[in-house]
Picture 1: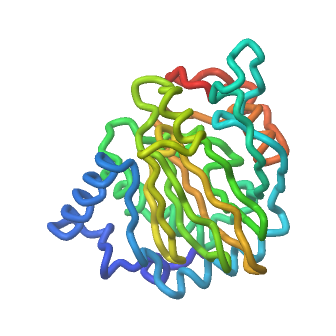
Picture 2: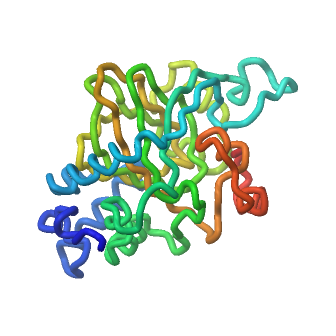
Length: 280
């Protein structure tokens, strides 16, 4: 049996399940932050019990995380020697991280109990303020947990899903700062702005520290972002819930293989079917 949402979500502060002026104002605030900044954070969205239960679940599935090490560019694409050496597509950085694929999370577990709470999707869709918003249909990536240890970090990149919803579960002893350049990729790849971020000379970069229990809504497909390397013995846990602009969307075979260590037939069947023309 799934957990009761009121034991997991701070519904007194964030009444996402109740129509009325308080929910309306909450949605409006998030919409404004997303429009201006590509990012919105609801502090202490989870209850203390919710944090504990998600941490326990993350602890139990952490051994199933797929660890990957190597170099990647912001688009998770292969090198293209036809481009100039300083082109963003040819700028590769060290990546070391681990993700627990979605098929390790039980329907009755704490994470899916939050995601499947009847009020959760309507609230997220209202905040995103778009007509076409769907849960990510990728069977390995609709609900995942990022597990990061000392030395791990995720370099500058764009997400393959349009919108990323994260729940901070456990912070590392040090590091793990979230840095992002809002809305760089809206009307095209905007390679010059991306290059400025990679060169460390952009004035668009912002940073924030997420505490356990915080809910973040982020336009990860359009905003370049990274997580700084971690220090200490405590792993960093972040749950990631993904939404996209068209139904039946899954990850590209190359990216899925890198992040989760395996590719399913559905990834090959639906490769190249997304509407936008961004590189990843």
